[in-house]
Image (cartoon, rainbow, N blue to C red; front, side, top):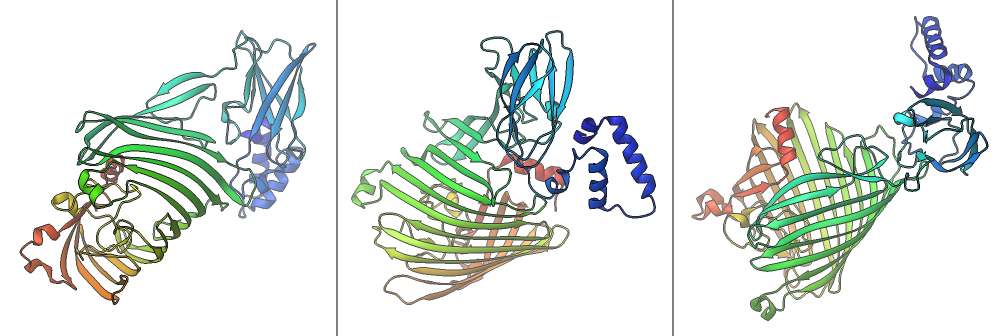
Length: 504
């Protein structure tokens, strides 16, 4: 371990044997142990008590070096006031390595340290991931060669522990599908690995088998990851996408966003964040759409807050959002709770409320959906974005009202909805929805529905069979087959993991 190497493994082993022998008959007191370890290590481990109580993004950065006679002088900066020691390892052209340890003070400024060695070809701070830093890419320097410190590009197929001496690009084949592009064959390029990093990018070009054209998406982001602050991360980024949303009609989407995640206990499943985003949409229109005065270009602003607690037994989410564009402003809130009352048996509750503060839109594109999703932000994985009939029109995305029965309208003033879903037996659930909505110039309406959900592959493919609703006894309707809904999430890695865990 880090402290064992700093103290010397024999001294550390002797300390552990002595401490365990002395405390063999009583529970270990963490504070007492750390205090005694600090004394035994000459206070090199004094930082541990505070360090283990928080999510740390400590980073040591080897800024520069210079030759001073028979020594190298390096400048090292750390991003915390904690007095954490660090290790320097040198290697010469014969592969011979030497180690040097240095203590630090409470300053965050770059500090000089002298290494009594003149033939070092490579200098590394905290080599072999000995200390949990958030960025190892600035921990080494080569001392010979004009381009020696330029990182080479390396392509990899699987995520693993990154090599800080390379710019590693991870390749991942992708397939997708929609009714207009048909099967999409793509290749994802990204630089995110198993470790957090500040600058990230992900680019996925696709070949559309339905149109014979190239489509795709991509984005870049930069994260500020402070070692000690009231926020955990501040992310800034831009992204873009280009796909078909109808036959021979494409959309182009450009996004810019900023989001802040607040600090939390590293062992907690709770997270809180705020964010703001701007989206620009540019859609191709056919002659009929132009005659109907549909939106070809529009700007959408969004400001939101989110809370989540991903505990396995008690799962909770809450979010609130304000959306604005040229013709409307609306505010909404959503709360979700899922309780696993027995192994693989869950009941969930969802509440949604939305209000259009102002609405001068040309059509119902931006209304609150009741049983259909108006995917004007192109954020949901609809197979048939513009489908109004057929099997693809029966796809369900649980947003806004979240009703499973086809109510046949939307809400252009306000809506409240309550959804419940409970396990019954094996892959069968029952569900019920109730809500009130109001359209401008009309009285408010109370609606409800209920039915059975079959989890063909849970969270991937689920089918909803409506039974009784404010429309009547739906199995008696002649077009009942068209009233059956389904959810489909094209995330094959999630499906693979599900089958590994086992069914039900």
